[in-house]
Length: 94
Image (cartoon, rainbow, N blue to C red):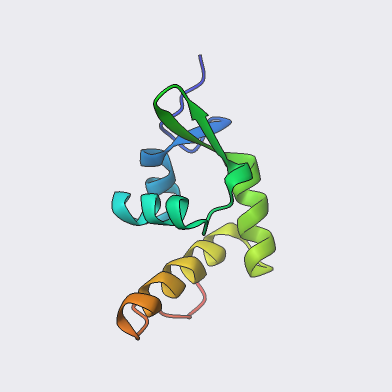
């Protein structure tokens, strides 16, 4: 059986999504609920919410036009800016 809590599996849990994107659990659920992460990336299995990692990677790369790590930071900045009007994450490379 594949491990669904870590980013190595085909599907990752919300906990895995948090680790993968470097975000907190409430932010992850906010991204999922508000449609920041598209519905075609999300799989509902019983009471579990799983994320198709390959589709997530494709979405992140397409959204930012760069690697998934940069896309995750861009998404986090966007949500933070909506909440506070300022950006906590530097736009530095690296």
